[in-house]
Image (cartoon, rainbow, N blue to C red; front, top):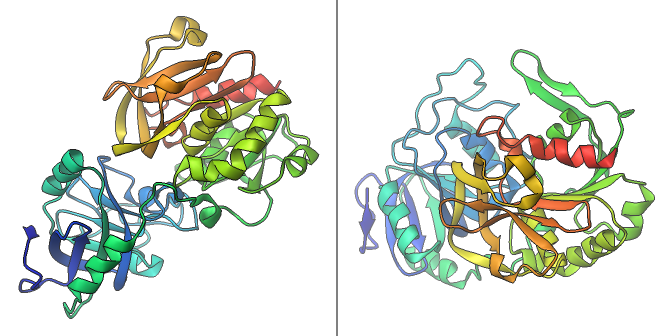
Length: 392
């Protein structure tokens, strides 16, 4: 089913996407029933749909998958990135494929219902992607009713009244509420997840702004002991844990909004010469703390195939190497606002946007992409080794 101006549902339609500009997209609903509001974005990855749907960085977003066959590997209890809020819904081209994978423990349709997420199938996802590329990521409401009864006017009003992600702090909504000693190790086929050693050194305190669990597993793999703390943890409580370094996690929403309480803590850590490593939202707020600015992107970067070039002098003989990276962000550091003493270390080969910084005279750096997602598959693990190696 395609874009329609009519508010009347075509025969067989049990799902709908209503954009804030009045565009209506009909399809077949699946997963949870009801409706949800969010920003519509697209993801170009061919695999990892369960990880995408459970990534807190997708909070308040509806994911349009460009790969047409979703559901073929099913779902399982090992591939969650978080147990908190992720994407509110998804849009797919074909009806959801039945699972056919030895690791599967359940069908994607049933999993979506259990997780309270709404799906819409039978949509021309290529046309929707092109619309986002031309006009930007729209606000919308996705809805599913097995009987096909929808109040389009009410759904449109909800889409139009939703304020959007700019200026929205979502980190507190998805951050854990209590401090946690991270116990999970790296995953191996046939063995599952290992166990982290609490005797390991050095000690990393990770601030959870909406973190992906695999980040902590990679820190453990690189040799660290990890303690995870909530987004609004004070400087005093962080330093009381006696960290050798502090990690700034990924997360959803506008970095400037989250930065109102996070950036003063990060600035104080920089002033104290604490080693810092930030990913995605953490990278953006590290840049804010260093004096740069962030901007809302036109369409964002989301997928497992984004080429990034190392450009910073600090990378020595590995400068100019290209990594294939995984990305998920709708905001970015404005490279033109980087102050003196902040080096741009990585850039996107798609659009030249900033993908990494290092702060001169400090053991502090960040990247815009997700090295823990292993799209290369090991192109970016060196970042974890670099950070843990700094802590000595």
